[in-house]
Amino acid sequence: MLTIKTILSLEESDLSPYRTLRQPLEHQRQGFFVAEGERVVARLIESALSISSVLMTQEWFEVYRNRLEEKSESITAFVAQKHLLHSIVGFHLHQGIMAVGRIPAPVPLEAILHRSPRPFLLAAIDGIANSENLGVLVRNCAAFGVQALLVGETSSSPYLRRAVRNSMGTIFKIPVVQLLDITRTLTDLHSLHGISVVAAHPHTDQQSIDAIDFRHDCCVVFGSEGNGISAEVLSACNAAAAIPMQLGVDSLNVASASAVLLYEVMKQRRDGPAVNKR
Image 1: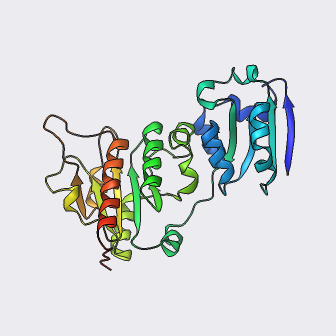
Image 2: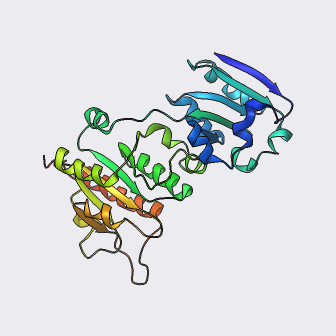
């Protein structure tokens, strides 16, 4: 059911999530996230995720009213004049259209493996704190067919506001598994499921990414922007692979590196038959 409220002031208590955009960790603690901008909000509306409310100009409301009315959950549509929305931080980013969605319930990794086609392609992140990088990494995961994102206990949530924005809403289609112990999970992926765990590690004397066989079940691990993958997590990986680069450049931004490496996975799987080692 859609409830429509015309807003004359942003001080109304129901609008608290939109007034506190600079408090994404508090939003996460309360179990919701804010989506900003037309493309991101459109993808949220199209997704199976639950929406609590939307805040938009009359013009945007007319565009999305029918689709909002088709949603099964109760949604409040706050409609405001453009000049009011200008007072919310980042107008050039949210474009006068925002929404509050509920962070989905955790999905067990076993359930994802059970329902996903082979060969599996998972991505895991260790110590990634920058929301913008994380959002772009999520977008790359969606682009190259990653079936689930495994978020280590030292990484930021992909549902933080800037991560959602930089993912361009692709986070709404990728299952997220929040891990309590990434090292244990990666070890179990290999020992219990036969999934190869490959570290994207620039400081390695092992193999270039094109020397790794990605055509079988695999999980690619990406590390933090400054320190890379921790030694403990690296010890749980079966292989480490580096992206070939010219001398004098020791690494790529993790968002850029994820695009290069995941493209290599897609290329191998497109060019040759899948090979499973189980």
